[in-house]
Length: 142
Image (cartoon, rainbow, N blue to C red; front, side, top):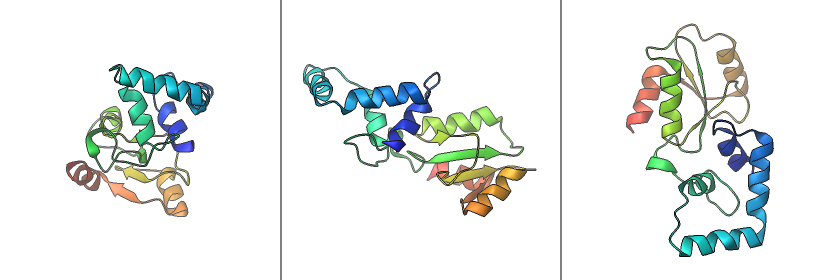
C-alpha cells in the first residue's frame, strides 16, 4: 500500500489524499471486478500496471517500466551535477524510479554531485547508499 501511494504521489498534481482515494477505490472488490471486465473487453491500463509493479494492492515488486534497476526505487538528487537536475530526475522517473526532495529511511539512493551539503550527511547517518554521478550513469546503463 505505501509503495503504491508513493508511486502515485510521484505523478504531477497527485497528492496524498488523491493517492489514498485511488488506492481505496481499487481496494474494493467490485471496482477490481470492473477493471477486469474492462481488460477483458480490450482496454489497456498501463498506469494501473505501473502502480501495481511498484507494489500496489495485489501487485508484486517488479522491474516496472522498461525493466530497469531503477524501477520502484526512491532517489534523492543533490549537489551540482554535469546535467540539469530536472534532466537527471526525469531519467529516474522514465525508468520507473521515484524522486523525492529529502533523504529518509525509505530513500534507496542519494545521487551526489559537487557540494552536496546536508543531504549527504543525512544519507550517511541513515545508511542510505550514495552514488556519484558516474556510478548513477553506470546504473542507467546496466
